[in-house]
Length: 289
Length: 254
Image (cartoon, rainbow over all chains, first blue to last red):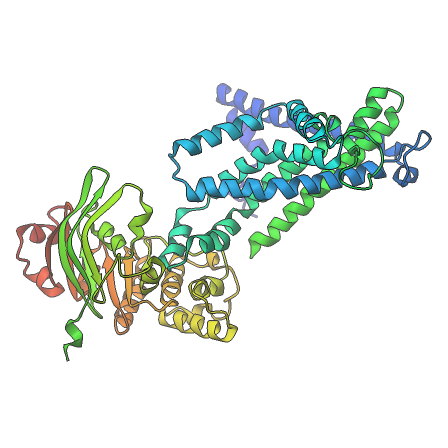
């Protein structure tokens, strides 16, 4: 059988580099950094799974949280409520303002540049600052006290720049040819945006939402001072409730419940993976049409 | 009887600037109904710019300033028409195929849908006629609901033509529609233009002089933003009046 001439095996690739020590060194370094990154990821996940899985039992998914049974269920539900509420606010506002910046303003406009600079700065601010802001505004200023709504609004302000930036980037990557094609048929701006530009930008936008969701699910600092640490599902969104990540943080800081904390970690990882998986599945189906 | 010589678009004393750069200088010309008019000239001579002004695609360019006037069907082109209505009547096919990432059917139905046609049977009919007009029906009828981006460049360009035809324009502007295509696809599109001119007026920008000679009734030669010569195609190519036209078509520059 003839050997294919276009498929270069690792061995051949490696031996062909032997004559060039410089490129061999770089080649090895690149492989090494890839291996290093992947192994750290697996190490962390593996360690948490190893420590956490044996500590997961059905009792942890019971409705009530008390001293004897540190149930996770209320905090899982709180996390879902927080995620839903914060995306409910941040996705329309974030996507809307990105649309305004990209589709309705000239790209060289000074005002646009200023907004972009601001959002990029906001994206880099530590989450505890957002927590402090949320505390001063919602808890104290509006005297809501600790509440899921206050926490969710704080988080939505926090992830707004993430959603804006990613949406902006994906809108910019939609070729102008599409816009011209649509305008050339006598189609108006709004219809062009909703029927051509947004569908083409959707995978990128969903990516931003996944990133934002990841930050919401994993957030603690911004929540402790806004939605509080009560470990049950409140009767309304104006009540206090801790998220799963906050639960994990409190268990760890008390120092007595390391096993339960690891179990929380496992559930948190599974939640994030599931969220990412479903949303990437959704976009795949969308973009196939 | 005078049908043949009716003007569909007139360009009157048009000057156009991109910022400080004057891209068109005092252009005056009349496009005849049911003619194929070719616009030729070296790169940067203003032919594409003029083409884009005819359906106001230049409005999208910030720094563009136009003076003078255009007349379309006897009415002022910029003041007499709503911009969406104007672009519906004066369709455009671009240099590169620019189908949307949707199915073939949705691409062709996009324009009619945007202009308010909802009934499926009506849309089906428009899609079929447009694809037939663009001579691509046989190749696409079994895959209407598959993505349009899986087709070859030449097929995509013909679907772009079908998409433009679906809103029933009076005039079709073509901006170097075959420059990204192979010779066989080019041939298809040239045959198509011959067929389409029975129903509409076509204005085509081309870099290919043989193409202009093959398909057009009238040819306009542009140089550095000026209209140098505009006459019947056979005259332009056999007996040009201006030395610069002669030099260009004999390949001495450009």
